[in-house]
Length: 226
Image (cartoon, rainbow, N blue to C red; front, top):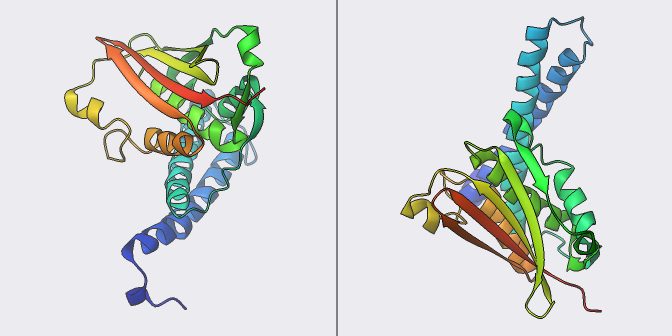
């Protein structure tokens, strides 16, 4: 048995997140989904709506817990970030499969030329997909009053990189938010800091710029050599 006095506090925090929070959240999510799907009887529309909200909230909590654990594993060198040739379409499919960006009426507008969807990147499909997903989710959570998030892409730097832009409209950020957008803190969350760390370790980067209510986050993704 592990001696608490010999275990760093940080390790105990992540052990707590893994066992004391994640396990009961899985049970809560499972039973809520069974209730919502009528396993224990038919629901009226109001009950269905409330259970949909419970399930969605439980999924969000689990996703945040997973991100915290992934962030720790990344810094411990425990994530396999081996890269392979992946098309931009495959990367976007991986990102959007679990994005759930349409909550509260959010819309995703993808305006990418067909030839760029076939562009071949050198990236880890799974973790690259997580990075793109978290940027899209950040934009979707901030996008007001127009709830549309737009994706755009272009080749850059002598065609050695592909720039994937995530554009959205939102209230202007204050100086503190702009300076700490990609740092782990209680105002901006963990998604963008994790996305930056993942892409940086795979040879990419993330940049942010804004003008009044127009915001643009650009992910620079390495292209595979021909």
